[in-house]
Image (cartoon, rainbow, N blue to C red; front, top):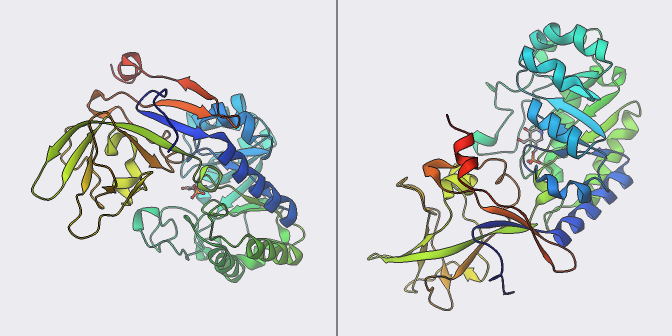
Length: 379
Ligand SMILES: Cc1ncc(COP(=O)(O)O)c(C=O)c1O
């Protein structure tokens, strides 16, 4: 393992070379399939990396006023808006610089139609395809009673006057077969609208940078679909795929607590505050240099730093070839997407620093946090 003793702990560390590798693959998919791939800021909004990302992608998807502003200030290019519900006081500010906006309901479209058309932003509707391969309810946007997207029966035979596109998001870390099924379902339920539209946004959840993703199949599926609907500009707006496996969260062992079952490594990070998906999904992240313990082996449970009883890695323990010592570094892999954007300062724990290992191997400390960041969110 490289020596990371010069890095501050805790720290989210983006490995730039891995990000560039993902972006090159994503760019080749968009070129070959003749589509446009946007960065959805909800999962990856580390704007110090945007100068690298926007060499390959020509726009972003924003789900709030703040994401839209960040996109305008730090990314530029096409700005696609979608939020489950827009607040009237925010909406006109969101439209500034926007190119596309999707509405979650017919009533929101009716409320904001005039403003949208006056601003010259291309309007669309989010649809619920009533199909999703996602088994975890909290990440399944297309369940029958979902609040996300309009069901076909509510749309009827004709789209409202002025609508130019449809938006569908029903995938999460999914493969190209799931997209193929999604497109079949869209054609079945909404196919009669497609020939009259200008664009179709197929949301996120396309994990094309995962090692087992079949990009050739994805390109074929998209190319075939485009051949049937040459009138449509096709957009994908992933987050995870862009930042997939592009860095780690560096933590340090502060204490070791023996229990009759395992030794608990008390860390300077918190699962609930800094790796929330590990508890939400839940899942067990990889730790560099560790593996699952075999029966009878010494095992370590990773413990977080807050007072929450459940602030530990409950999905399983780890085995290390060398016994852990206080002061050892622990690297949680793949901690760049859906981490920094979701963190909190619960218990007053400091936010991990943010840094980049550049392609030439040099480390740049981009940002450190402190007491003022904690205080500024409270009153
Ligand atoms: C509307 C929408 N677009 C894009 C995304 C990004 O999805 P992913 O990070 O899985 O690619 C999400 C994730 O929830 C979403 O809700």
